[in-house]
Length: 171
Image (cartoon, rainbow, N blue to C red; front, top):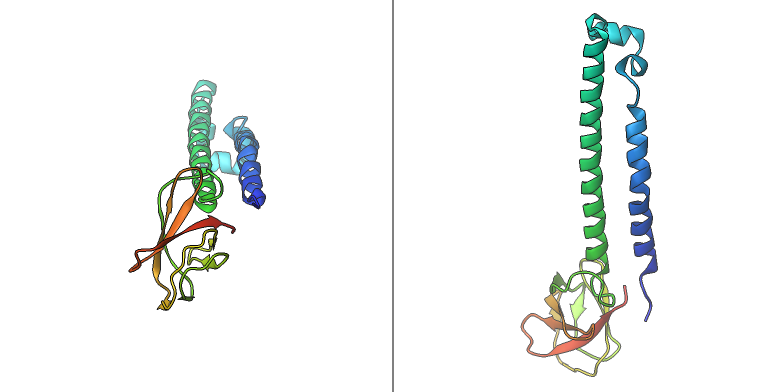
């Protein structure tokens, strides 16, 4: 069975780069406002009127806000990346969610047969691995439900049919 190595590699790489992005965002605002702004910007904002203590308090407050926003954005990006990996890789081995997959079948369904491939409208491709058979059926883009069984077995059922076929995800 071919494993989906590239999506996992991309997700792992993206998640490993998040600390670097966080460090870059924090470095961008290190130092005080007077160092970050031009003299004209500093004066136009009225910050030249603050004494050293007031300016330090403002710098500390701003640094805390930036750190808080950066942390929140990184946590959100991590969760989005994790969810994307789970959704994209459902059905490969035991990786991802065990929730049933509901989708439309692309093209015409003409029954079950061992080795037949089924492309879903979500981009997934599944191949039938058992000898379940249904013949004489023609349905245009029917809805299907793929449900997990034991030991990483998945079953495809087409709406309106009582027969289901054992499938494995190939793409």
